[in-house]
Length: 308
Length: 308
Image (tube, rainbow over all chains, first blue to last red; front, top):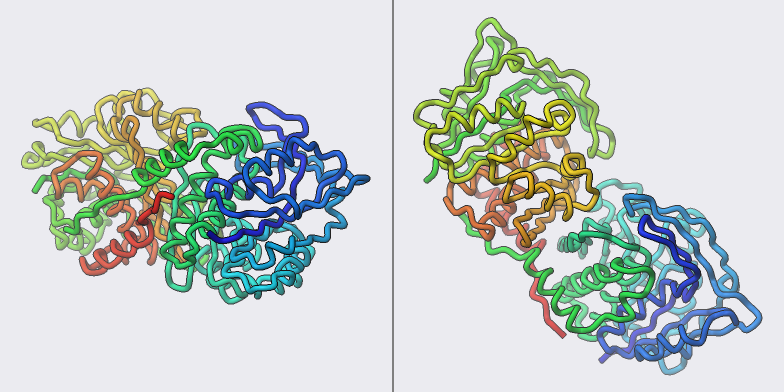
């Protein structure tokens, strides 16, 4: 079993959807990635920062999922990163109402000593220089470095982002981000341009339309499970990334063929995440639930074509 | 081998895309459906109407594909239906610039005698009363009736549309049409509501995002082949329908399992249609091309999940 280092936010979210709204609840990219990866019983550690206002029960929740939290710095006098957002009726777009960086503004990630030889590194959406710092702390070259990012960094830290892209293996971003990064509408052309920027593997997340995996001339397309209702999309992309990274860390096989399975696991876990507010569904997700849905996924997509 | 009756427009199109524009070229739903179905060497007949301005060479083109054209009425003193449209840069939306109904305004479809026992009927997008008239002319109850429609008929002939929906087996419409027909955003809920309107099988076409097939509690999701370039989307939906109907007519098996394959064939043929203007690519499509792309399709979507 491989070690997995996860870098990203551990945060408070306040969410409003057409189905309801929450006060400050547990959120953050690393939280969702960690909860998803914990499904695979890998040796995962989160590297992040929170303020003195962050409840011990949330830290306990992560620990109880066997996630190492020694890399989560607690800035006693600081406040935890807070995001507040409101989803539109179609659930495909949202407005950010509040972004309080708080302790994240001065975040200086420190990878715990005993995780500097981790085989898999998952860089959640953060400033590219923060992501770079984590890569540089690794004492053994990781087998696989996966990166998520967002349009915000393309707007205001593009050079740093392009620099870190040269050092990673897999980028996992959404379709609009892929288009913005490359200036190409066709995702096939966009993926090729991103390959040229560094990452050998390009995962493009299309939300309810599934996810694409590109590697040179190989393409794999995993549809999303059609859902009756999307209750809260917050964290779905991070849950996908956590499932993807966790599965690859667990199996230790980073071939394209196995990455297909990682995409399927990521999609499957993301389909649970959106069923309840925030992390609620992921906190109470059994292996049996996951296996059952994986079978649904297989039925959803597999066919035996008769060539005629 | 089953007989297939295709009802729909045979028309002139003028198309403008970011890649270029055409004068009046061969178009129409029945044309695209027929060309796609001709890949299966089924005994297909088109029921339609054209004007005296319709070139013999276009009729010959259809005949040469072994499509029976005895049901295409030629109104010598009339003009052929003409549509002119312009696609936006993202190719996912378009403006209709001209719609000249011409001879279509008084179209009274006559199914040729020797096709009134056809096993499969494909009702292309037309006024629901025209579609109904074809169903009523069938002397033997068809094994499968497939219907396409559009938002226009939901706006101005909803009652007639709902009436014809009670008499068909499969509806094949796009996602926006499914949402308009049901008032539901979730396609899962929309499909369920459409089931209640009559069709046991609901195919929802999502363009570049693939197609969904619903039958009671069964769902199948075929992604679209990611393309480097969509040159002209005109006719892609009809080509999908023609591939779907043609495959089912050829195999004579209308089970859910076989309909999955029909969806895959439809998607595969549609992926060719968009490569050139109008019908050009479909006119010159070899069985070898199709088989090759089907294999790509299989590679694109199939996986062997390891449950862990």
